[in-house]
Image (cartoon, one colour):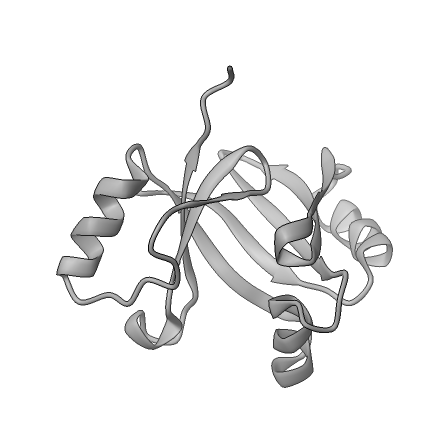
Length: 135
């Protein structure tokens, strides 16, 4: 069974969006993190058992910058926590889902991540994520 790990929201201004979501959720973000490989800064809010991740592009070639250019700010993806990301990638590929990466890659919040193409998931960008064990 999948658990919703987080909802990703593309934003133009991380500082202003942090203020907005702090008011909305009644608590401040708990972390800001840069994911240099994806050209993005992220901010996380805990809400119950799940999280909200705000994503701000740090470069024009970022997927987030391109998303905002096409669609504006808003929901970017939904992430599901899995216990074995490689097994789920294999299972979902066999079910006909199109994976956007062949191997899990390091994402924000100490996670391995893999994305499923929105065209194979009713227009929704789906992220699989698995916690990376502390060394």
